[in-house]
Figure 1: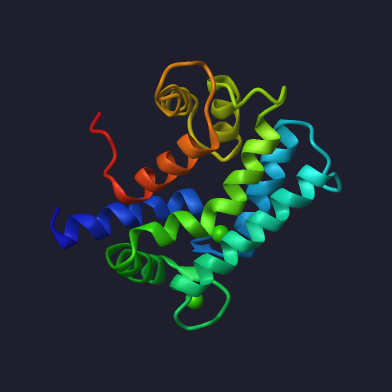
Figure 2 (figure 1 turned 180 degrees about the vertical axis):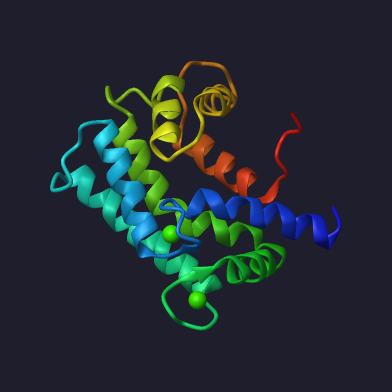
Length: 172
Ligand code: CA
Ligand code: CA
């Protein structure tokens, strides 16, 4: 993959992080994502799971800002995301997954409604809550259950997130 292709791919992730679509990534986008997931599963913000999710969202934002908010204005512009995130992914691809780990852990706890693991259907609900189109959500959720046992482990989520950040979209 050449450098230009790599940066285009990173740029394509920007819209997913910019949850409110206002053209920059900031703390609000992460708290909005947390609120959307909690609402989807009817989990109260003040519950332990709700607080863990907001805490994970804040940690994710802080990690993102540490990597990409070069001018320190508490917003990650598209250009900052492309240059900052792309550079960090080249230097240390594990790092991007690590900053998301507490958030993803908390999402798994919310979406695992029966304590037996996240089902593909629940994973699809998470993705739809985060603004992913219905068909894409269902395809991604099926792919998440890599071993086909009907449950998605936290490790499968972490692996998929890292892959999402570093591999190109499937061609349509
Ligand atoms: Ca935004
Ligand atoms: Ca900035």
